[in-house]
Length: 358
Image (cartoon, rainbow, N blue to C red; front, side):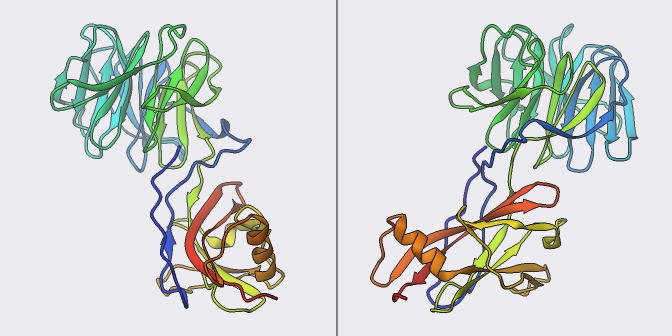
């Protein structure tokens, strides 16, 4: 899941600003690991999932019920029932709820999330059963059972683009989720979840569904994937996405240490950083001076100050064959590490490093 990175800034004398690097595709051996699970409020056959920024929406295949659900308190916040009883997947567009109806009639509905009333609807741009559903900020993605995933203009119902999934996966794809760049799809019959490149359809990541049978809905909350299926449980899954950190370096000078500052997004604390995991460019560990928490950039958000050995960095740069410009290295430095819950964070900044010899 490659996110768009923001270009760097060269700082010739002192750190004057900090650069936020967008989330990158950090994948580790915990991909597919279930972090949390909770029984679904739907007790017959849970199908759809959507995340609205604060809670999950879920629905069932047999009774037409739709629930807004807080998975962490196991609380139903709202519910309503649709007359049609073949509901499949859900998507949240920031204001309203969308749902696919699998059969009789095969439709995609836009619903008022307060009472479930229909705002608008359209027939899908294919003849098969509509199933998986996701919202990418502008368009809907709709899965056609037995073969394709379509990007659809919700105002016209017309397909803009489509790609095929492996033909042997009959009755698939099921649930869909959009992570900002790629589509995740659930495969019911083979019990798999796949991340797809939308330009080629190729699977970038594959792991076993946590539902023992009947993989169905998926939802993306900005950091984790949620999944559900016929076992009527909802699962929060680690897919190895790193947290976007803000970092800054004071790299100029000839001192023994290069100070660096790490700031995490709102809701996360730098005190939860596992110091032993922090590395510079995946190579250099932090030095002996103890890390300190302070507000270096004076934005009222605590930063963690760490220090890296300058000679170690210069030796690594030389050994890597990175050319100097005069007495300087012009390079992007990256700090990455883990929090105490094993979440990965990463941030980068472009700097100039003086090397006058030892």
